[in-house]
Length: 117
Image (cartoon, rainbow, N blue to C red; front, top):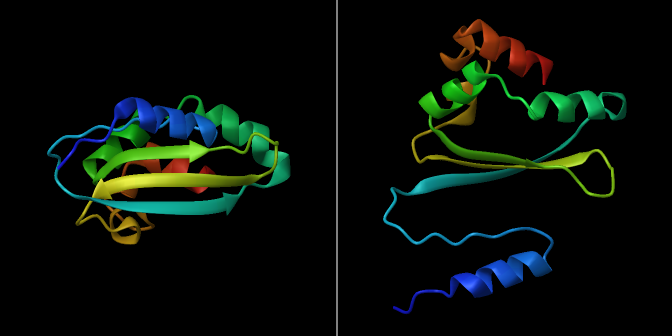
């Protein structure tokens, strides 16, 4: 079939208030999840500050257990309702692979990060 026009994707994304990059490649299929969460208002600035410098043990652990992309979108209006978008290997289960008692959380730094967040 006809390939989508990359420029059109960027223009549409810009119109929606985000940057959209269309990449056409033969990657293995991924599972995609979108979550919404409210951050406690008195913790907002601390939460944002921590996420500007995610600990290497956390990034390495997430990759090791199947996370391919994780983005957190903070609302531009200053509210505390955040969106998290995750792309992962099809076989990845967030509870089993990243939740309490998982191998990911055996790393003390990853466990500390997750408990704090």
